[in-house]
Length: 152
Image (cartoon, rainbow, N blue to C red):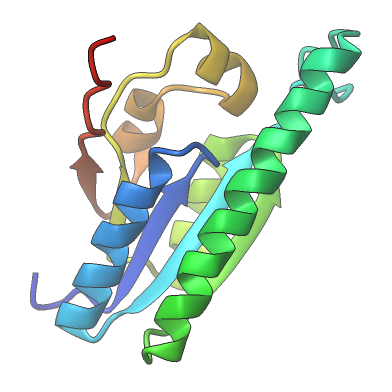
């Protein structure tokens, strides 16, 4: 991994993304690489999305995005203060296309993203599966396993 100069972390604005972002910080520090964090989600409540008229679910979706982005922004700002070069890319649209465009435009060497397969709700809220994204990427991909849920 000696040629890793530009790293892209894919954030789907879930609580598990923190682990992928931490991997990005760690590798950026270790290799002196520039770090990009992309928030690429489609809006399932827009005309291009599923367009379901469920106001309470739409409110929860917006709150989830707002809260998670706030937390991730705090993490990123903390790392910037430590000297890590971090660029946040917030994109709304087809996540696969937006991620591929960022990889191409920013000349990304390594993508870091969560390894788990999306459930039905995540697929509805955030779009396609990792498999479709991974197959088309022209660079290496590091998949991060999410921590298992504690038994209740």
